[in-house]
Length: 312
Image 1 (tube, rainbow, N blue to C red):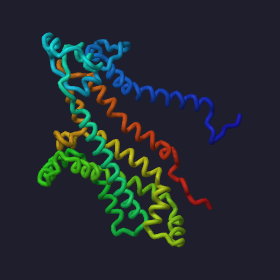
Image 2 (image 1 turned 180 degrees about the vertical axis):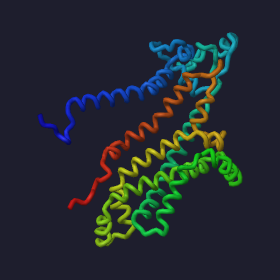
Image 3 (image 1 turned 60 degrees about the vertical axis):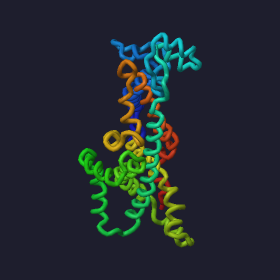
């Protein structure tokens, strides 16, 4: 019997397939449970043993986007019959909707800060990575190590100095302050990742473009950037995930105008205590932008980093 050193055996394929499927199931169980909890009633969400089969309801999403107050029977009668389905859900619980919640504002803050810092990080990181990759920068290795060392530092170690600096500069609880902070934290990661991708792009492409009359910036924009699309896409996803999920700086530096969703979701409280369906609903909605962003860039993630390599 002959064996191939490149083609795995059928048994190996089946074993690898079972491992991948098992890993996928294990990692998806918490996500599925969070999504399901968002459609449970408050009683089902805290039932023990846990309720697997339940009657779905949108009460969690109604509680997430509205503020409610308890009402007496007389108040409910004076308010008249409910005019919308979500008012009916609130009435069934003996409450009336007093207004919208602040989750929408917090979610929008996450979108502005997360995508804003990611875009700025990609612009600065791509240019810095190109400079380190193509030019003779004095003390290049030392500078690269210094940039990387900023990523090694735990955020809590600089939390108080950053808080004092932001307070003196008037950047506390502002979108601009959080965008600049997340950009500074993510810049080291983007520079190191993008430099590796740009190093893989043959310099002969740029030399040919320069001979054809392109300027250095035109060669960078029309030759290097398309070739580095894979690296830019993957780096952008990593930077967005950090900025999207960041909690410590958001708790310390924001409280109102620029507060993002991560520190707001755990504070969601219903009329009778912690509203777990609303918390789960908020977490589910919070997952959507990153998932959509990753899906839109998936074609770049599936391409090899040696795309466009010179063949001799």
